[in-house]
Image 1 (cartoon, protein in one colour):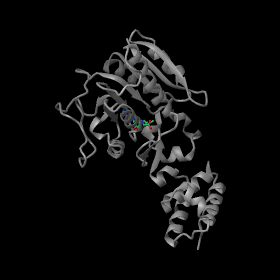
Image 2 (tube, helix red, strand yellow; image 1 turned 90 degrees about the horizontal axis):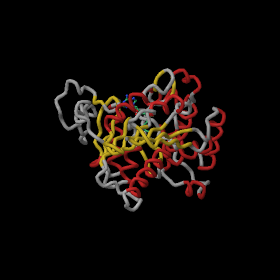
Image 3 (tube, protein in one colour; image 1 turned 120 degrees about the vertical axis):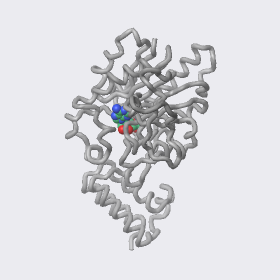
Image 4 (cartoon, helix red, strand yellow; image 1 turned 30 degrees about the vertical axis):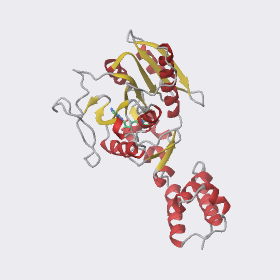
Length: 322
Ligand SMILES: C[S@@+](CC[C@H](N)C(=O)[O-])C[C@H]1O[C@@H](n2cnc3c(N)ncnc32)[C@H](O)[C@@H]1O
């Protein structure tokens, strides 16, 4: 028989031995997940005896975490911008760095409102926003909560990721304002062959769809395009933590041999799909700036800005379409 304190102690010891980063927090989160209680309860009831099945489930999760599975895959969730997102092995686990992208978007929109002599806090009325490579949907859904009148297109090359994003949108009550689309960046998969059709994923429909409203011939125009594309270089794969390399989707991690390969197309397509004065906001890899910043040195772009993350890494690149 294990009480709460003993279970936690055992879990922490096993994760520490397995060199799991933040082993105490991981053990706590796994125990909370199993017993369905708050952190306050956990520390207020150290003598509470766990049922045999709860103890066994906890120890199984500890073993899986010790073997490298990310905590978020075991609990099925991750917080981002104060919202809880479902995560599965089909999507990137939302990262805190990406919250800087949300900050930059909201700042840029506020400046735009001020320039138009309107109050800075926008509700997003009339805005058309695209999120490229939506993964869990964390960017589009967070922006949909912040901008309750805006409408969104969220693309991903992975139908499995789109299914998760769709569930997250429903969970946060914004599914009616986000169109999910299987696309290579902004080019719909199969567009050359598909007849024009509306490509929304309906609740019980298969996740694969052909969204052909966005086309290169008749580009759908946006006020804002955001993206956190895959930006890790395959040549860096060996230096990644095993939790990341072995458990997160390859399509979400690797942008090519160097990592920054997708940005050129992303920026070209964004120039075609942004309205005049439209805003582009991109997350960068730790070493992407040098390769990506020059791609904006054309007459298509102005008002270019770089924002560092908390580790002083240039993380967000923003620009305005001329
Ligand atoms: C780094 S993850 C970002 C996920 C999410 N936006 C976030 O910030 O957590 C990149 C996402 O882009 C998708 N992706 C990769 N290549 C793509 C492409 N060519 N077109 C569209 N999406 C792509 C991946 O499937 C993955 O979901």
